[in-house]
Length: 150
Image (cartoon, rainbow, N blue to C red; front, side):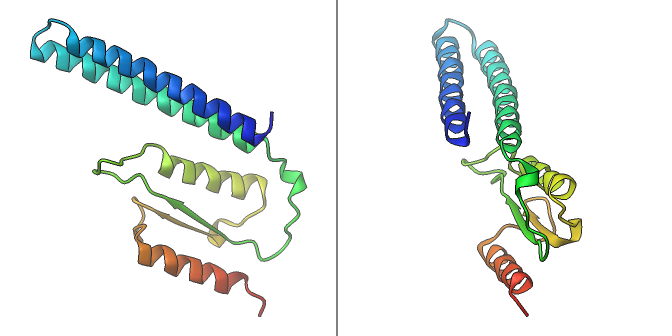
């Protein structure tokens, strides 16, 4: 299976999981239960969905990374990296796992691809430098300077 097929399968599976939990939550909201009970069960299934989604996301990324053979990558000098993970915490567009993905990619780059930890810049919601437009552009400029021939 190549990355395109894997991504297609992941998206289809994720959509099925979303539909499944939405059906359950809609069913609970239509039931003749008091407000507190409905709120409890809806919260329960929302948490189960979050766990299920996190598990699917982890499996997808692990399989995606496994498709790349580290021995096929032959960059020998001037290896630099920039990893950006934005979860958009506290917004309507909040994501889960982006910062964890950044850490996973960092680990893969240093352990399997020969990058030095100091040669990889990381910008996330949790780092000192926040992932603002200006910080990201500045990080790209620093990266371009670092890899340009002297």
